[in-house]
Image (tube, rainbow, N blue to C red):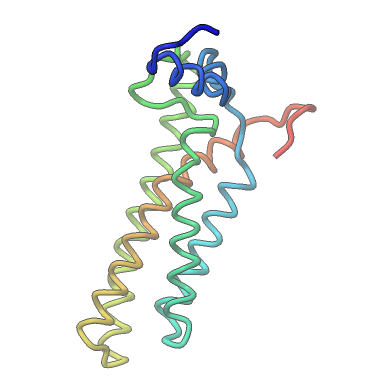
Length: 168
């Protein structure tokens, strides 16, 4: 029986997981139509529940955080290649990415301004405490971060033509 060094045993354990083989090839980018849509809808429902109904504050916040967590994976698997990645990008992909991000950032800007003014109006009319106001602003920040991750992927995914073998 041959004795392997500890470092080689660690390498063998990593190879056993299959992760190095999956990383060797280029990533398979597919449209994430339904996952990105689900993340956006769930984040919206969570935000409205957390801010709109005090009794649903914490369940709404939980839904918002789960949607935020799902949205964070969208850029890794979606059709848009990363900005500073090593994957080659042609003109069509560059134009699609620019279009998706311009639309998404326009929507995010509107949501940020509208959300802040809505929170200010609701806090004035509802006589909120400072803690409730702070929590609502944190909810809005999570929602904007979820939109930033999921919305460009959603826009690019729905803009692509569906291929016959694609499954969401």
